[in-house]
Image 1 (cartoon, rainbow, N blue to C red):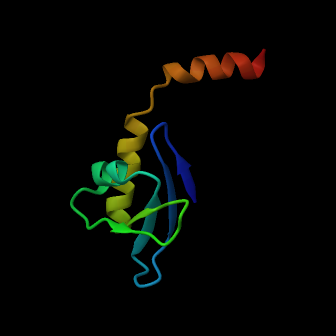
Image 2: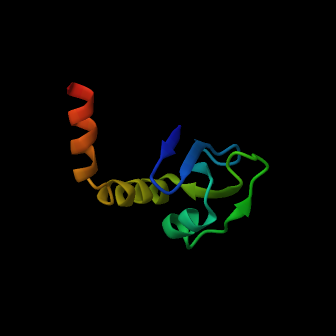
Length: 85
């Protein structure tokens, strides 16, 4: 799954080592640190997503909740107007 925010893109995949975890790769080390600061951030071998972290599914769901809380829905008004005009 790929998640795009205004500041970064995240690639989420199942963790090959632990079924209770996910591997999260990101275009921004700063954003990974902001969402998963207590975890070890590593360099990824994927050039499109150069930073990575492994997180349990609960930590990932907490980060998703934070992402949703940060959505500025006022930005969607203009997009909606353009889409339905």
